Length: 396
Ligand code: ATP
Ligand code: MG
Image (cartoon, rainbow, N blue to C red):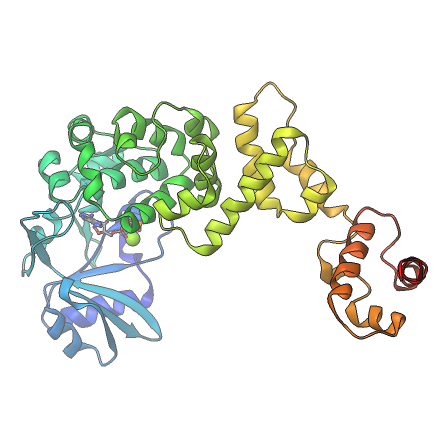
């Protein structure tokens, strides 16, 4: 079974490194996910060859992180990450190793990895290398730090967030000593860059067990040290599971009574994510006073409405909610879904009025958009023209 691991190209990369006299193995998440019976996508390779040696074996490579030992090998148009065995020494700032040292021993490389389930390696022939009991922990569905948990979190505090993100995605428990070390070191999360935290949070939100993971964030008091994280609030875990990261960020915003801008700044969200949150913020304000109106269904995407309603229902469980089906039907039943659906455009108006363009065109187009949306008249060029001519003459 395990001999079938990896894509044909990734297997070829391992074989060519071996043929050149080096060690090469599959490592990381793909090995773990394979043992859990899940599809893996990125097949990371670790090797005893130095980056320079890797580049001599393959004609096409890209230096993506050569200081950390990672070379991207391009073989048969497939990019494969190959990372030299390495150790990391003395972290003085809780987030970055002072020195990365390339080594020739796989065991030393596995030792620097965060959790036992992530410190497994698989050879081309299907042999598993498991120096820290990762398989046993996988079987008991347990996240356990490699070595002394407190030391490992002291080196790199992000590992605490990674622990809860794996708890969310895999539905695993965090082993007792590892959990205790998180409780004791929670405050050091402030040393980690928010960009790295966001990568893990995006994965955490989407995990099937995010509710439990969010409780762990509160229980370990990580919440007190994460940016804009409500700690006395179970809304976040009650709202879970989230089907997208945007839903999670929306819940965080609404649970803590923050604005879209505040969350976007604190977690360096993309503009697209920020716009989504701004829409949710507005939709939530609308929902506070009534059910969604025709204008709301027109203005907001279904995803925005779903994220908003999800949180609203958690806050007001006794009130009648709106189902996704109903929201979808309401959106579908609108006569138009955007301005582009209108049967007329500005040029038509100019022609009908025999007048040059100007601000008046936009104003009249907005009136038409509103009237068609509210079915005052149908989205029919002739009918719109009739209405326009009578109203326009009236007003001129
Ligand atoms: P995913 O499937 O979500 O990508 P993953 O385990 O592959 O999970 P990555 O962030 O892609 O996670 O990291 C790849 C591997 O690198 C991990 O399995 C782990 O062995 C190691 N690793 C990543 N981040 C750290 C870290 N902060 N400290 C120690 N080891 C790490
Ligand atoms: Mg990965």
